[in-house]
Length: 102
Image (cartoon, rainbow, N blue to C red; front, side):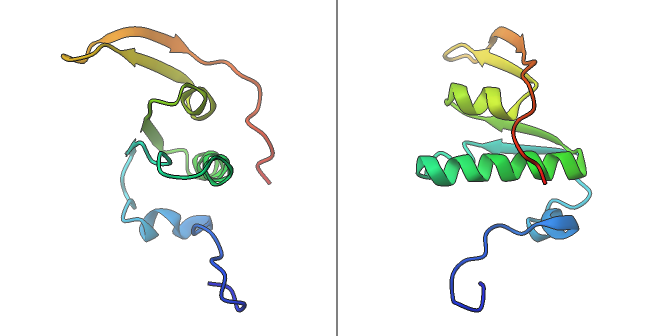
């Protein structure tokens, strides 16, 4: 919380992984991490996750039903079939920079 009582946002900097109990992990699985958020908050959290990735370079495996989110967060997207889940399509994503990261 900031002094005015508002939430200051997610933790940033080198303490982000220990804060979430992820220190020492090389692969981080995120199952629908932003699914319950409104679109504005979701966009901000997606940008934040990209910044965290750029700083720490951990492997992040987001699982999502949101195609835009998959393309924004990933350098490869695998599309799965219904049960039993099998990879039906694997697509390398080569998009320009994902926005400001400063």
